[in-house]
Image (tube, rainbow, N blue to C red; front, side, top):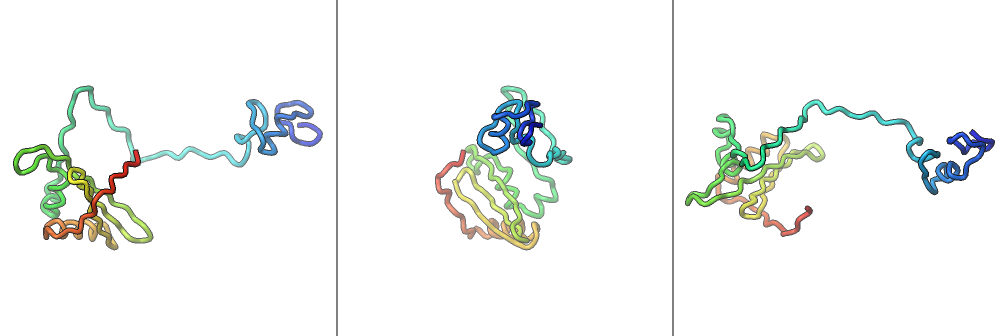
Length: 152
C-alpha cells in the first residue's frame, strides 16, 4: 500500500486504484467494488430441487389432485386440472397463486382460457381456499378481466 493508502495492486501509488477507491472507475487488478464491504455467503436452498427436463417431443401429463383435495374443493380442483370442456374441446387449466401480505393470505385463481382472475383473501390459507371454492360453486364469482398487458 502506498503512501496515501490508495493502492492495492502493489505499486507505491496507482491512479487506477485511486479511481476505484473514489468510485469513479473500476479496473481489473486494482481497487474496486469487489473489495468493499463484507463478503456474502451463499444461501443454500433445502426444499427447492431442480426437476428433470422432459425428453424432446413428450407431452406432460395433466396434473391430478389428491382425493382429499378433490372432495374438499371440487370446483377449485376442476378449474385447476380439467383439460377439456364439456363438449370435448381442449381447455387450458387455470393457475392458483397463494401469497401473504401484512398478515393476510391472498389467493388468485387465474382462468387462462377465459382471460380472467378471481381474488379472495383471509386470515389463513384454508380461509382463502374455502372462499374461492364458495365463489366458484355459487356461480356468482366477481371475475376480473385481464388487461391484456404482458410482462414477458
